Length: 393
Image 1 (cartoon, helix red, strand yellow):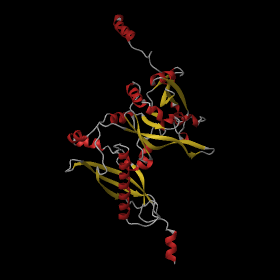
Image 2 (image 1 turned 90 degrees about the vertical axis):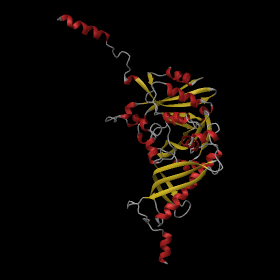
Image 3 (image 1 turned 90 degrees about the horizontal axis):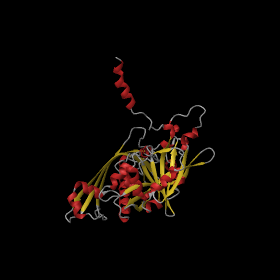
C-alpha cells in the first residue's frame, strides 16, 4: 500500500514553483516616456507611477500621493543605451506593461527618433498597443512633471487616458500605438500626433496650477515633422474624422446673434468620381444632429440650419486649402480612392499620393437635424435690451 504514494512523491519533486515570479510590490512601474535629442545624444525621461493611487486613500492618508510620480533621466547614443542608463539608477526592476504614453520633442522627431521608438515599443514583449503619442516644442521633462488637477490619479490623466476628454470635445483626436502602426502601413503614410504645451488655465486656492493644452497637430512623414497644423486649420478636419463624437460650433460669428450649437452623431461619405477629363473629383456627404446651447435672439430653425451648413462648409474648404498648400492629404482622399478604385489609384498616384487640386473636392452636401427637446427651445431666455428699448419707444 505504501508504494502507491511513490509516484505522487516523484511528481511533487518535478513540479514547477514560483521561484522566478516578480511580486508586484517589488516592481517599479513605467507610466510615461519622453524622448529628446540634445548635443548628439538621445535623452530619455521615464515617469514612474504609484499604483497605490488607483485605490481609495485610507483614512488619514495623503490625497496628494495619488498623483505622486518621479521622472528619471537617461542619456545614450541610442534609445536602448539611454534606457539602460536609467536601469543603472533604478532601485528595482522597471516593468513596462503599464506604459501609457510617449512624448517626443521637436529635436527628437527631426533626428529620426520616431521610427526607432515605435519599433522598440512594438517589439518589446511587455508593452501593449494602448500607448498614446504626443509631441511638444517645449520641455519634455516639464510636461511629464505636470500633475492632474484635483489630485486625480496619474493613471487617469489627459496623457494616459485622453479618450474621455475627446468624447466631450472631439477636436484633436488621440492616437495610440495600434492606430499609428496601421496608418504608417498605408500607401502614402503619414500620422498626425497631438502637439501640446504647458499652460496655467486652472487655479488652486493658493496658486495657479500647470496643465497641458493640446493646441495643434504635428504631421509626421518620412520619419520627420512635415508640417504643423494650427487650431484654425483643424476645424474642418474634426468632422471628417471617423472617431468624431461631439463638438461646439459658433454660428453668426462677430455679430450680435452669435450662438453656440453642439454637433454630434455625424456620418460622412466620400465618393470619388472619375470625370470626362480623366481627373478624380470627390463628393462629400455629411449628416449630423445639432442642439442649441446659447441663444441671444429669436431665429427660425431653418435659419440656424442654413447658417450651420455655411460654417461647416467654410471650415472644410479652409482646412482642405491649407492642407493642400502644405502638401498633406489630411482628408485621406488618396486612401479613399485606393480602397474604392485601386486601378485608377495606380494610374494617377505618385509615391502613394494622388494629385490634389483646388477643385478636387467638387461638392459638399450637409444635412442637419436640429434637435428640440423642449428645454433647448428656439426662443431666447432673456430679451435683448436694445430690442426691448426700441419696443418701449
